[in-house]
Length: 308
Ligand SMILES: [Zn+2]
Image 1 (cartoon, rainbow, N blue to C red):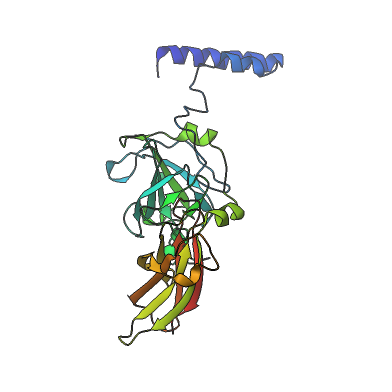
Image 2 (image 1 turned 135 degrees about the horizontal axis):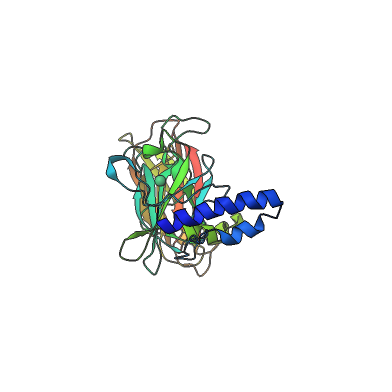
């Protein structure tokens, strides 16, 4: 590009030829190479690497994309359904469940300092297929919803090819936004990122516990689901969601009176019951109840059964 570079490159070629003739080590040439940016780039933020598994990527931030856009993230190529984990402790501040559009299934985690970690193209296919069936639980881990607190290394979803990634290899499109929203190049931070996935024991330790006492068919044809849930750490009411066929269809707060829990769980209070009515579920469909961790770190599947 510049005259300086041309001169240096020209000189380098000439030197290289001379060195080859002399049979000298190539390390000499390395020191004469024109200065370039450090390959590690700039570390902007220390966080957990968002893919919990083998992922390959180069620096494509700012590369041209369709419609005159420029690439605002990094594409981390990984096998379909590789877990993606929370890059930091934070809250799920947006979540899109849609296989169409540019992004497809996507979520954003915002940490306490306001940095945002954006996950795009989460899985929308049944195992071993590219069927686009887009069942929620294939894209997002149990309990992951807008407003959910998460802890660094917690599985929040899975790599896929939803959105405009359908015609490419499965990958996580990952974006880093600084407080205020500006997307910044995460390449250096990703190279330096710690690889960490919370263990199953840690997840269970942070997960609510409880049960599903009844899944019954009401007179109007809808299904009623009832049970109880207690958070691992606090006595606050636990949010519970009913999944039908792998998709969340109803959410409630488990805050109903359950005096029978006072004996087995002393000191935890009695306001832990839930009862959700009016749920549409055809007979034989899988019905599950998920309890959302109050403080993050993991959520629990309280039970699954088939609709009567
Ligand atoms: Zn991308």
